[in-house]
Image (tube, rainbow, N blue to C red):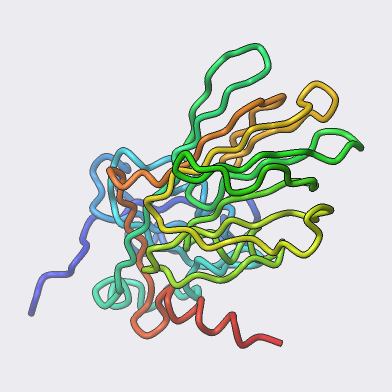
Amino acid sequence: MAAPRFSKIHFTASSVPEAQSALKQLTERFGSVPADAADVIVTLGGDGCMLQTLHENLDRQLPIYGMNRGSVGFLMNEFSVEDLQERLDKAETAIIHPLRMQAVTADNRSHEALAINEVSLLRETRQAAKIRITVDDRERMAELICDGVLISTPAGSTAYNLSAHGPILPIDAALLALTPISAFRPRRWRGALLPRRARVSFEILEAEKRPVSAVADYTEFRNVIRVDATEDRSISIQMLFDAGHNLDERILAEQFVY
């Protein structure tokens, strides 16, 4: 009999009762090793829990398998205690790369953060934001008047990007989605698809009158004057999905929901 693909599992869970109950069941049945000794991480919760787990384990470069004990769970597999080992053995791997955000604030301080889902710029007050957009050092939009704008990875295209009416991207697409949030001018602009190697820069116009914050997933910097974002392909993240229900299939299926 072949040895299991993964034999040292580290379990983690969100704080909601359903996730904590699942954690108790699974650790009693399979045990749980420390993350530094594991060859796979199984996380229990919703998409927010998965995002947090991915961030917390970037340096470990371990494959991460999620089971849904939250609300949305787009990035999660169905929950089951009985067949976990078999599912892990057969799971398919999706490789994703984060965005690296570099932001300069009004006090001329530089900040950096990684985004697995998206980098978003958001107005801070009742005043609409005014933003100049440059791609690979070429100005593409002199002035976008909006509530905000975001740039999304394929993995994040079904998150905030989808809520802002951005396109859904297959997980292996060599693309990033640039999507406005409630654009006022130009009113009919719906965004753009960019090659994943693109370097995108946002310059905040009238920053003192119209302050803007920049958010990389859940890391926020306020009163930014410039934000640069590009894919960091030096970092590879492994996500595991049940055979036949991988992220490509989920993304495809989501486009036919009505």
